[in-house]
Image 1 (cartoon, rainbow, N blue to C red):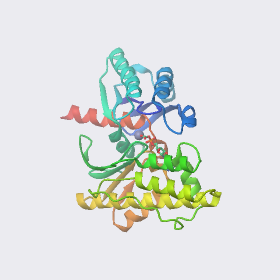
Image 2: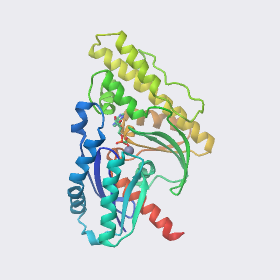
Image 3: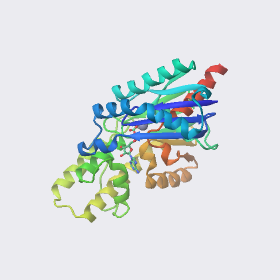
Length: 319
Ligand code: KG4
Ligand code: ZN
């Protein structure tokens, strides 16, 4: 079964063809990132206009890369929520048109659940039930996943998302956008023990809070001006260490509470190598498995949307 996935929830325009929910035949991603750089964050109006202009070409490229004619597609799957309204609308309208024109079914799926599904693309190992941790530019959430139509929220951020905190810390240190990969690279040269930054406590233990640590970095940076390159690297490493520690602690607590020893991590921040290494070590210590998607499937992409569409589509048929 061939599913065409469409993802336009933030600044990316992505279209993908996935076979049987597993094999990614193509995954085309066009991004308006460079146009947002000077603003230090995504400007919704710019994102939406670029998506409107590019979506048809991206879809053609995805079909061409997959070597599939459009009349071979069995199902269209598109991100419905959450995301930027105008951007979502571009994907939804295109998907509805395609489904109508090709006379094939359409499934509208949740973006966060698609990030969880990314763990099942191009790989056989991951299984359910599991606890899922989604760490991206817009979300930091924990879920209990019995199956893809039975997902239970366990916790979420009360303020900033973890990727957003990476982006803001990079902005405070004048490092550019998006901040995640830049902070990760710089942190490799820094001393993570030099400065003690803490993530704020939350009333509910499976919730997250990252706005306090961002403000702590801001005050620290303002009171230690001018910052040398080495000092910035120490700040990046200390910040990253504290964030990773809290993510690991809460994800493993969720596993313990739900009595599962399987953790699926997804979202843009899951591309971070240090985070992956620390999770693998901590999970092994706790006797749990931890899974990550391929790096290309951590960032926003349509392959995860196509995969989830397949999974929900066959569950519906079988029901
Ligand atoms: O999942 P994603 O592509 O979009 C959303 O759904 O938000 O995630 C983008 C976020 C950005 O905040 C970016 O800074 C962060 O993921 N990110 C990283 C890394 N690569 C991307 N954060 C930490 N380390 C990375 N290597
Ligand atoms: Zn995302």
